[in-house]
Image (tube, rainbow, N blue to C red; front, side, top):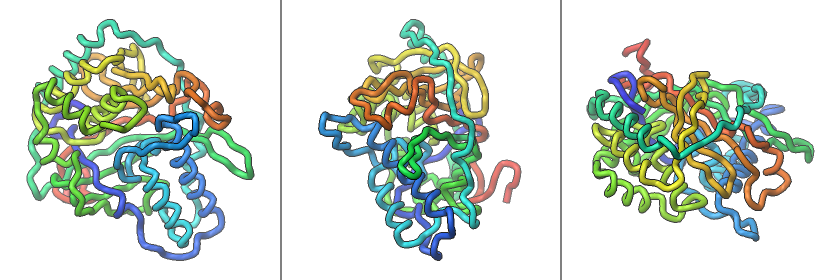
Length: 358
């Protein structure tokens, strides 16, 4: 995620402030819509957690439910959402569900992956990140990131399950440098005007916390392994995912993004996919790693010429280990998550955008 002053930002708050206050009894259709989203979160969380023979899902790393990838939402997020629904709360404005799960099914050819040239590509990506401006935000500024994103999941209605995809849609996040104030606007997740992300919980992805991370790739990778210990389906996959999180929707201080790419080059199993497409339809080259348990390949997509970060996607490339009947509905070539960064900048306040300065 190479940044100019207009292309670098945000960090991640906590779960508690996602849910708006209880307003009224849900109108017809709304309860079913939120039930589908809840079931998608629970299914994806279970699917992407290492699954022993008993199929007891393990813990996931702490993330708020505003996080882009439902597959990585904590079970706590699903429970909190369920509680809001039981209480009659509403998460999105209007009387009709936004209808996000009506987009065309997201699929792609499963491109060949190779380890050959991956180290060289990551060196070029790292160099591009090192040379890009990364101005530090002032305490009174907000980090703004706008993206196009979509998710694929299994939806169950009347005991019938099917694979559905969101329509690719715009997502906007504002976050203060300390990570304590923020705002999210995303159809299907928030009311029309958005919802607060304010929290008093310190986040490892807040600007100050990121600035404390080492820039030496070896020391940084040790820190990444420590941060992701006990999470994901393997130690190396968890580390790769964590690095992707720290460059995907965040604002790494100067020198850190380049160091993260150099650290990623040291993780076993990291490969190159020659052609990958982000949620905005931009083609690029990807750095990727296959999760052997889930069968999902996480891909970071970079511009082929400038080596700047474009976005990321997760492609299901083979059947999951110990897959159940619902898992098997998701076929190889399904894009389970996709995102494209369209704007990254520093702004003066919440709801301010590059085109509308306050």
